[in-house]
Length: 565
Image 1 (cartoon, rainbow, N blue to C red):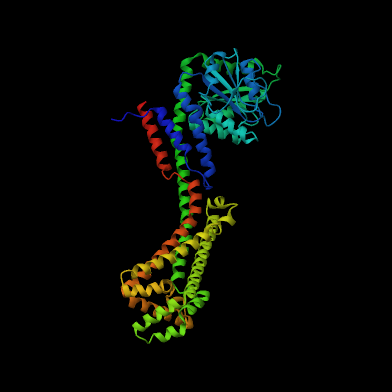
Image 2 (cartoon, one colour):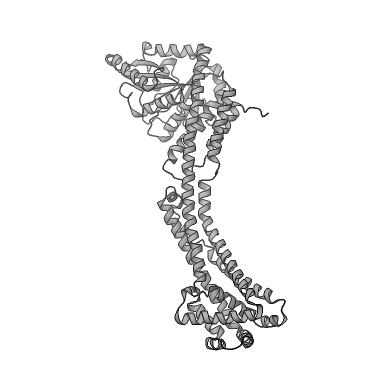
């Protein structure tokens, strides 16, 4: 029987699945999903795993709130010492400050809590990292973090404030009588409610004459928001004394915090509440990430389908161009006439097959340069067709992607590059067409290898016989009319009849079919290589096709581990 996965192992797997979620496509919901995924990963790293591994560690209370709410002054006043510097200028850019008892300093000096954040014990303002301030004024068992403003105009400060709040056992949320109904504080308070975080709210800077009315209104709002269990403390607007709030204004909050520090059972209850709430909140938050990944997958499918349609259209256009006779116009037609001698070949239709065979031998052995010219003209015509359809497919794909969610960002700044064939397309296409011609000549050699009389004929004109096979591949009459039909269709029929006299009807049909199949396969390879440019962009942006299944499996494994714990 398989041993149950531990809670920490299950949580680590969930964290890794969320971190690996493919969110590279600019879908409508991508930004929100990225924020949710980042918040889950940060909370697992900064709080859940560290707390689960050390349930008896000191309680961490994060003091957060709006700009100008008076957080730093409140922390200094509660501690009774100047442990953090109030910010006069906005935005405040100093590093967050963690205040703890000297006895608890080892618990926060390592990477147990907020492992990705550097530590410093320097004096004054420090940019970046977490400044540790030990003080005898705070009892062991409780640490306070003075966090940046949650509504700072500096995005990095807002992100850091959110990260610190997610790492807290307890939020001490500071607002003011003038701003307690603002949207940003309530967004954070709703987050606390959704995650089951233990919460205390400080109503700071309250005019004495409005204490009763404002406190009652805020209490009612907390009740309606599902936060009725939050402790509410009111601090009146009073003159500071040497930078500190009057003792009477902070005594109640200080006593409550000191009580938590002194009472292990109360601390454990706060930890259990926040820990359980955070774990329970993961189901919905990871489900939101999974929904975002599904949106990514659907978007990637739509983009992939658009590229498939464009390049499938190119394959069909190449197949049509090869078979409808259009390649036998212009230069190819001129070289074909030069090669076969139109009048002579048309007159030969009335002759016996034996005489036709002799005339073919004479034509092939007497005009080697004409066969080479025909080969070259055919090569150029096929290359032009391939390049034209590949360019059209690239342009169609770029146009389609620019109109689809997620596609515009993938091709942005690369429209000119992606909207045409890749730089090495032309030389590769030329190689493929030349190799195809060589393949046809090899087929002719192979077909005549066991027939002595025919082999002698073929040894006189392999190139010429091969040319007849190649032209036969392109000589469907759908694209020709009038004199073109007579020249291309008629003379090819003559050449085909001569080859049939040499090899037999079935063998000649097989030659043409194998030649056409090989050319189709080469065209498919060329177009597939061109489409790979778009497929690779999608693969980078929306890889990990099993990401949704992995997320759901991780949630289920965590639920099982919690039940077994």
